[in-house]
Image 1 (cartoon, rainbow, N blue to C red):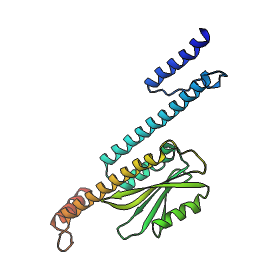
Image 2 (cartoon, rainbow, N blue to C red):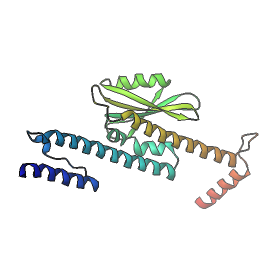
Image 3 (cartoon, rainbow, N blue to C red):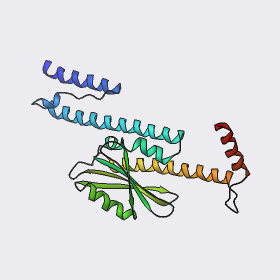
Image 4 (cartoon, rainbow, N blue to C red):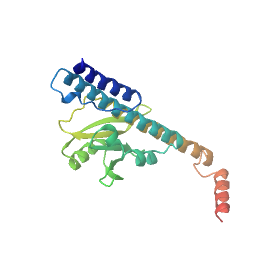
Length: 220
C-alpha cells in the first residue's frame, strides 16, 4: 500500500500545484517501475502547459500594446527580443514590405536590441537569414493585410530540433498581431492625412497650419 500511496500522493500534489498555475515536475520519472512512464508523461504535460500559458501571457501583452499605441515600430522594439524565448527557438525575425516595394528585415542581435537590414525583395530575405545563421532551419508565416502579403515572421530553430509542439500555429499568431498593428498604424496615418491635407492637391490645409501654430506657441 505504501509503495502505491507515495506515487499517487506525489501526482495529486503536482496536479493541485498545476491548478494554482505552478507547473512543477515530479520525481516519478526517475523510478524503475511502472510509475516512471506516468511521471515522464506528467512532466511532459507540465512542460507543455507552462509554455502555452507563458505564450498566452505574451500574446496578451502584445494585444495590450497594440490597443495602447498602434505603431509597428514600437511593438517590434518591445516584442522582437522576447519572441525567441516565447517560441522556444534560437532566432526570430520580421520582414516588412514598404509601399515602394522594398523590404526591410528586422532581427534581434546579440545585445538584445533590434537590427535592420535592407533587402531587395522577400526571396532575398531567406537568403540573408541563411547566410547569417546557416545552422538554423527557418519557418515563416505571412503578415497579411487585405489579402496582400506585407511581410513575414521568421522563426529559426536548430536543425533536428523537435517542432511538434505547434510552432507553426504560434508563428501565425505572432504574424496576425503584427498585421493588426500594421493595419491600425496605416489607418491612423490615413485619418491624419485626411484631417490635415487637401484631398485634391495633397497640400497642407488650414487645420494643419493652426495645429503647428499652437504647437509653436506651447513650446515658446
